[in-house]
Length: 124
Image 1 (cartoon, rainbow, N blue to C red):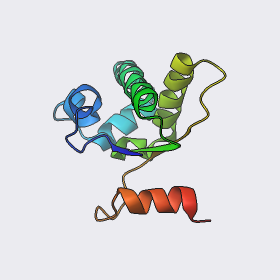
Image 2 (image 1 turned 90 degrees about the horizontal axis):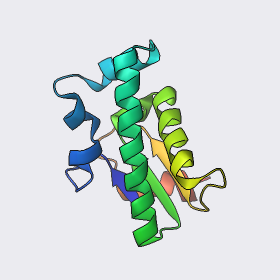
Image 3 (image 1 turned 90 degrees about the vertical axis):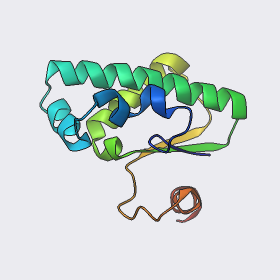
């Protein structure tokens, strides 16, 4: 299963960094987060909590074998780690048997979910 955070689906209003940050660019969020600016770190932590809840609910309802979540915000390892930490907090240390990948939006916007799944799960 593929989730594009900024695709306009039902998760977007709750967890889209674009919607939550107003007119602030993803690059400025990443830069501010990586500098450790408290307001941005708190914002990312809170957004990560809601994203992790959405991921867990999606997994619980649909029971996919694998899940890819992609967004420009995942260009930051620190932010990906924040989301992973939130997932562990909600799933417990044992985690889940599902393979969850957090990926930056492909540089080529024409690359769709099927190509992402193929490149990340099937292609070696």
